[in-house]
Length: 235
Length: 305
Ligand SMILES: Nc1ncnc2c1ncn2[C@@H]1O[C@H](COP(=O)(O)OP(=O)(O)OP(=O)(O)O)[C@@H](O)[C@H]1O
Ligand SMILES: [Mg+2]
Image (tube, rainbow over all chains, first blue to last red; front, side, top):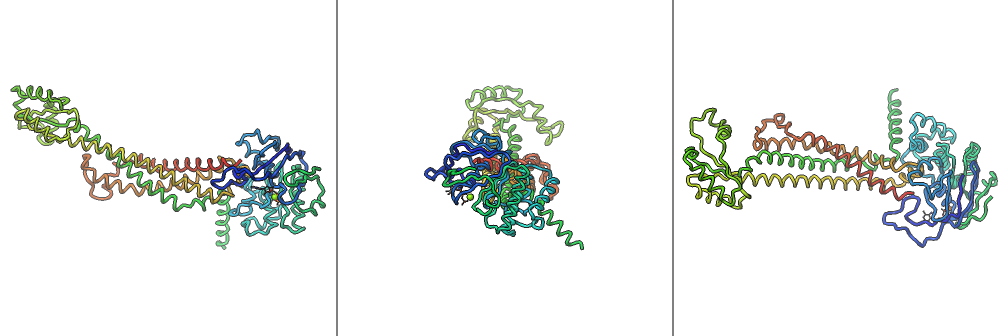
């Protein structure tokens, strides 16, 4: 379950999701990225997260992914209240959340199979089990033949599927995908969507941010509509 | 036939090793500069340790001599004709003298045995040992005054010089300790800089691991393991280079502390080296590297939520 109650978010440079530059000070004056956003996503649901560019979709996903804390309001993810949880309890929670980032964030110096294995290694799984799980994941994502290649040598669609394989390899309770079909042709996009739906069918709560209205029409599901940091429709 | 399989094996090994190094630290904290710098510092540290140890040896060896700053020698008859008693009284009355004591004849005989044999044919002189209130600025002037006060007495002031050497050796020990602390400080700074460079180069990878649920302990541990390995190896190399140099010094110092100089490499006084301290050096270096990396990385990670 995911619950946002009156969530506001203002990016101070110090709170950037990817560590701030040295010498940055928490900056005031930047406009708020989210205002008073409230919604509840039941366990096992599938939701679209829609809105124009800059509306705050990625920001909502970052909050759900626990890589940002809200400036105001409260965020509850998988039963944990983000404002009350201790920092050292966050990693265990993050391991139950799978994320496909808008820019993939594959590690460039690791072959695809090690990128996919990363969450398992972080969780300290046995190496034998990891090999089996990764092989299965790569088969599921249609990447068996690319296992030993570096991400840079993959097509956009293949990188996208590698990112998806890494996001689901831990069988997450919550799966977040940011623009998972950006830059993909229709066939590739539907293929990724089918994989996301399969995870939903297996009981995972799924949230997918996208611009692609054709996809939303092809897979009708409840949607959160954001505009300039505000939630304008829900359902 | 064999070659493709071999190449495949090597590739698999490479992949496996990359899997265990998801931050690619082998690349960004390379096995060149950091170990070389640490080796140089370990060499300095080893020299400092050996210097401190050598100074300590000299001090303990000479201290006995320094306690008796001066001696006054009277003819052997002085012990029986009252001159000794008078001399002792005169000397004890002098403000510079803390204690004047006649040396026990048995002890004197023992000291002279190597030169004079078991039953000396010559009569042994009477020796008065003087402990002084403080080391005189001008030992020669004091010796003159004592010689005037004790007619027929021959004054020997070498103990004053020994005491000065002991003071010098003590300050050498202190300097060596300071040098050791300085080297440790510089090593810490060097490791911190190397780790920060590694963080900067792998910042994106670190935040990805963090977002995938890696703990601070996990991430800091990877840096710390790498740093400890590199610093430990550097420390070992530096110590190994230092050993023969130190053995050479020990050889030069041998006569001063009552030994014989060696004739070839194997005859160098290897056993005299402070092996325990030297063996500890790479371990301490590795520990220092580990701690520094842990502190540096954890400090950086605190900025992530
Ligand atoms: N790291 C950041 N630092 C400062 N401001 C940011 C940061 N990330 C996003 N913003 C700002 O927050 C607002 C919402 O951005 P966000 O990335 O959530 O939008 P989005 O809906 O995902 O857009 P897109 O569809 O283009 O991906 C934007 O005004 C953006 O400039
Ligand atoms: Mg976005």
